[in-house]
Structures are given as C-alpha cells and as structure tokens.
Image (cartoon, rainbow, N blue to C red; front, side, top):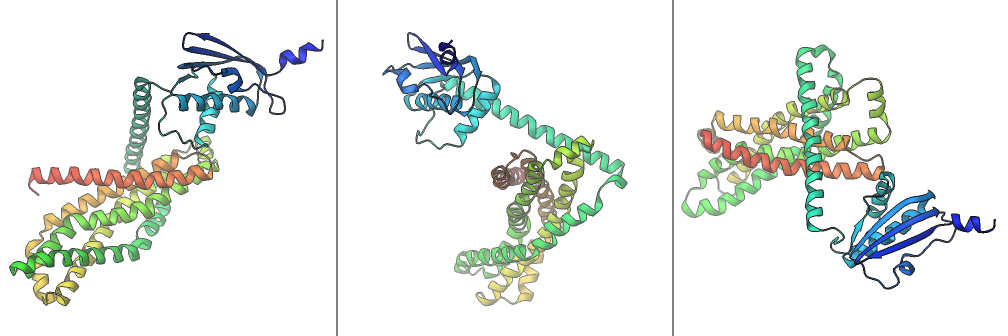
Length: 375
C-alpha cells in the first residue's frame, strides 16, 4: 500500500519516434511536491518536434503550467515545434497568459512553421475583422432605432459627452491650431518671399488649413484626448462587470454607452474644426503682419479669394468622418478590453493607435476621391 502514493505523484513518460518526442504527463501535480525536470527528461536529446499530452493527469496546479512553460521555452530557443493541440483549452489559455507575462530574449518564435504562422495570423485577422464588422453593424442598427424613436435616446448623456469632448477641448485645440498656422506661414514665407509672392502666403494658409490641417489636427487631438478616454471608461466598466450587468438587464451596451459618444463626437468634431480653421488663419495672419508686413485687411481679402465654400465643406465632411472614426475606435477597444487594470491601459493605447492609423488612411482616401470628383 505504500507504493500507491508514489504512483499518484507527478510523473512524465516520453517516447521518441525519429525526431518527434511525445511527452505524456500523469499523476497529481502539486507545487509542494517534487516534480519532474524537463532537462533531466530531455537527457541531451534534440528533437525537432515535441508533442504534449496530459490525459492521465488527475489533479494539477501551477506546477503543471510551469513544466509546460519550460518545454515551450526550450522549443522556442531550439527552433523545435511544440504541439499543444491535445492539451485542454483551459490549460492552453492559462499557458498563453503565463507566456505573455514573461518576456523572452528569443528574437523570433521558431517553434511554429511558416504555414502555421501564416494560418494563425490569417485566422486572427479574420476574427478581428468579424468583430469590427459586427460592432459597426450594431452601431448602424442603433442609429436606425435612434431615428425611429428619438425619445428613447439618452440625450442628457449625449450633452454631457459633447461638453467633455467639445467645450473642454477648446483650449488645446486653440493652441495647436494657432501654432499650426504659424508654422505653415513661416514655412511658406521662406519660399514665396524669394519670388516676390509674399501675399500668396494667405492662399497657402487658407487652403492648407481649411482643407487639411484644421480637420486633421483637431482629429489627432481628439484621438489622443477623447478616444483614449472612451476606451478607458468602457474598459473600466467592463472590468467592474457593469457592462455585464447591462446585458443581464437586457440593455444593449451599444445603444446605452456607444451611441451617445458617437453622436457627441460626430457633432462636436466639425464645430471644433471650423474653430480650428479660424485660429489657423489668424496664426498665419499674425506671421504675415510681423514678418512679411502684410496688412490684415489685404491678408483677409486674399484668403477670401483663395478659399471657397466647397473647400470649407470638404474640411467639415472630413471632420464628421474623423469624429465617427475616433468614437468607433475608442468604444470598440474599450469593449474589447481585458478585465484588469493593465487591460484598460492597453485598450486606451490601442484606441489612440487605431484611431490615428484610420485617420491617416481615411484622409488619403478622401484626397483621392475629392481629386477624382474635382473638389
């Protein structure tokens, strides 16, 4: 009877078939009991493929994960393929979290083949695309319900978000826009004054600010300020299970939390853009008066001849699209955040990066489209 406890202890058996090593774990794995060593089991062998099996494990704790993690690390360093497909899904999830929490000096994970890596990346991209499409679809359906039943919309929350992302952003937008106009004016003056075209600085500033810089700089400021705030707020609500509570009560998080923020940004971004256009033109006017000795009246008249209403409409149209992009990026990353403080921080960072990337792509697409239609 004394041998029974030993048979229940953690044990590992292996079978080498060519360059393939099959490792089977069995028994009871406890962190307080002695465990087998991967290095002792390997015994100087160098297989190119390692397969892990845990069907005979009765009970386990973190000691099992540590052994599996050692095997994975050795495979990464040696370039061997580590096959964990036969492990239970729960074990694989915990093992992935353990691997993510440990930095490694291995510059490239060679434990998977090229085809496996491409397949995994393709599946990951497909899942992310599906999640984004589903989120955008829910927002579109929610907007349709808003049009049909506006009395059910939380207008008070929308007004509060307008104040937070609009009125509270006026100081930083003012500073950025004015300095953008100053910078563009100095840059244009260096070239135009060589040809006696000082007055055309007004044309340069007017068109650049109204069509591009006003909307883009406002969107970048809101992406770093408001988009990150949306992601952090929703991520914190998810970590505190507040979103789960809304779903339990039958309340859609998209209609309750996302739509007021989207509408607020969609309305306030073009207004801030118009304000930024005015500040940018004033910045160029200040430089023209101080450096080029151009009177404000002449500068304003030249700006009016260069900038038309269609140019202003282009900037406003871009601003509406940019505001929706920022809102979608911030809310999506917030709803996808992990249920931890670190997950909230990563969600905020991801929201800013995603928003700025999509802003640049959207601006390039708009430039091509407006050039095609002749705007």
